[in-house]
Length: 466
Image (tube, rainbow, N blue to C red):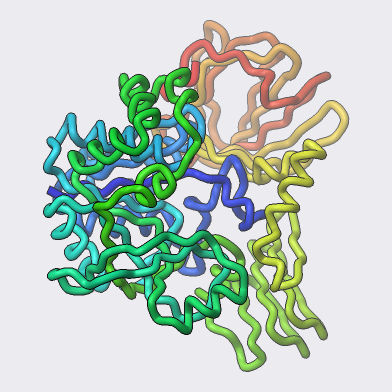
């Protein structure tokens, strides 16, 4: 049995302003319109047959992740989750996943651990490499995937390969090397003895449990203490060491092997990596979205709505979203996270949320706000419902644009049709539902002395948020 495990976490700060804390890079759409997480699920489904696919992610991303799984059309019955109360790096996540797989499928089950934010463009080659890794894993090894480098790269870790084994393309590992400087990256590339560390692993549940017990017992003990249910117990999980599985186990174990692989891998860790997915024009410009480029060269331009025009510029990254614009030198792609840190220090919301925010029931888009008012466009999915709630400081006026709304207002229950409206004063219990088969779209006008998103008291909620 092969059980794919998707690790979906991390803020993706080097991909701001598209990747944000509330909507991180596994959910960002690539130029083909699919998210990284959806592509990871599709790869997992290709290898798992009809078996389980386990996702380890933050509990805040559960509904977003479930939506991507549904888009992959793999069958809801196969979708399994472990929900972290907070990020503690990959070692605690892997340990919790191993314990779950052992409990459900036994110690001999082979696990294929894949980050959600990586890309493999050649699925056939990936499946072939995964098959070799699974064979080595069944012989008791911890297997990592090493990618043949096509350039010196300072943004990835490296693996120095050792002697070949009896299995094709499977080698012993001499050592792991952290991200090198430019000179060492060039040496590694020219030597031919180093591979990029993809951050993907394959092993049986039993083998990894024994190696965790030997090399990272504190991580394993914390995972055992917190694995009570789907939601990992916060206090115990918070005591887990914040350490990667590479450092905790892979760099210490004597049972590590590496599969030499070439399946179009990228970790999509920066805008430079994203730009490589777009074909350049004759002047080396790469663009996605509505762009106009005149007398310019070697630029990357990404637009999510507005026309972006470049005139007489070279070597720039321009990333435009509805509420934030990034302009940077292309050789500073790894430093975009410094912008996010500056925004956090200022308390600016753009490090955390987009203008359009996803909720379990649909989305809302902030259209305009000012002193004592805020205007939103709300879209409720068919059959979905907001919580039964109340606001202390704001009143809400709802105007239905399309569809039909079912409204609960204190002890009343009534329908609001297209071009009709209703008013909810502050302090009144209310709920909005979409009983129809198409999206419900409405405009919400808030007014009051305080309009923060935290002015909400939930009494009932079908998504467990009350």
